[in-house]
Each structure stands twice: as structure tokens, then as C-alpha cells.
Length: 195
Image (cartoon, rainbow, N blue to C red):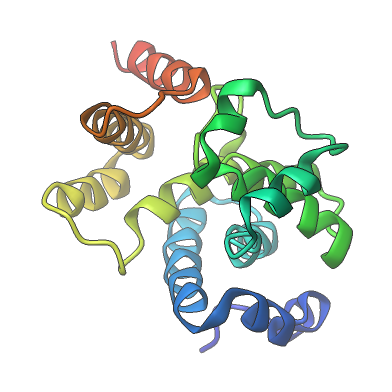
């Protein structure tokens, strides 16, 4: 059984998505889609919105830094100086621009999910949370604590989100990279809920 219904495939032009992403990135996208659908079912979320967001979350990944910045120049997604300096994550807000301009996606929940799938955001909705989590736990990713996080997010979604955010921040600190306030504020919000 396909994870995506035929109407959605037609609407999204899956061939175009495959061509833009390339073989390896498309395979990752399929794994994110699988994880996202599983989480969305558990949380009783709109499946079509989750599927569209999953399929398009990395649509800008192959763009150069210059192309990403050009896409974001006059977009609705405010990219502050710190985020602009973290070029590996600019594909997320640029992806939201491409989703809207090239694929005709107008739904703000879908666009938000694409836009914040790398940094997270303390005010992001459930669909965005699912894509953020699914990207982290997708089957193609392997590192020591990941199986624990996969089990935890199945048991307690918000605790799983906290563990994901915590691990992302921990990794960035170990690499001596910038930590964007969106990620830190999301961690604090999730930590506060678990008290």
C-alpha cells in the first residue's frame, strides 16, 4: 500500500519532486514520510497535510547558499542574522518558499512545517512538530541514542520532542556551532511542560 494517495501524487507532481531531490535525498524523504505518517496517525492529525510537508521538507536542499539567500530575500519567512549565518539550515525556510511558489502550497500549517523542520520553534503547531521529529528519527539515520528516542516518541510525543531538541542542541554545542534561540526556546518550553 502506498503512503500517498493518487490525488495527492497528482497534485504534488512526484516526478518533479524526485528530480529536484535526487535519488539519495528522495530516499531520505520517503523515510521521513513513513515516520511522519506513523506519528500523525498516533496524534490524529490531517494525513494529507503531513504527507505534503514530509514530501517537500527538503525540496531546497540542493540549492547553493547564494540561491537560498536569494529565495529568502523577499519571502514571508523572516530569517534573522543568526539564522542566515547558519547556512546548512537555510534550506528549511527556502523550502517553504519553493513549496508555495513552485508547488502551489498555500496552507500555513504545511508551510510552517517545512520552514521549521530544522530549528524547531516554540510556537510551531503539531504538524510542524511531527515533521521536525520525523526528520530526526527517520530510518536512514543511525546514532547511539536514536533507538531510545524512537521508542520514547511513540510512548510520549512531547517527551520525545524534548529529547530530540536536547540532542540537537547538545550536538551543536559539541561542534561549537551557533544555537538559534528558536531551538533553545523550544527546548525550554518542552522542559517546562515536563516539570
